Image (cartoon, rainbow, N blue to C red; front, top):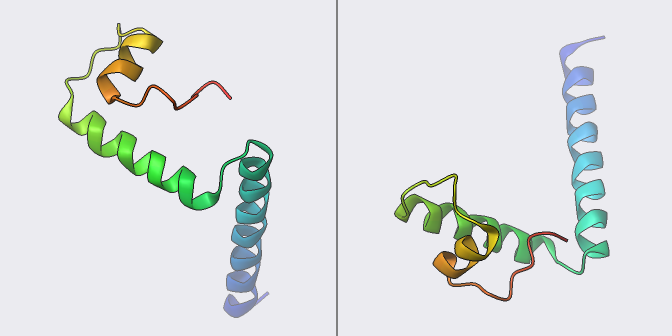
Length: 73
């Protein structure tokens, strides 16, 4: 197998994973854009907050200021 065939397999595998991830998000009622926005928001907000592994789920939601996000679904 040559290098271009290997690259094609990697691209195909990535496309399969993206398709699977999108199907999971749709089943949960979330678009890819919504998921990425929420993920970026969590990263930026969590960088501003001190890390505390003892925070409860409700305390974390309160600190993030996003009471409507349901992380358990």
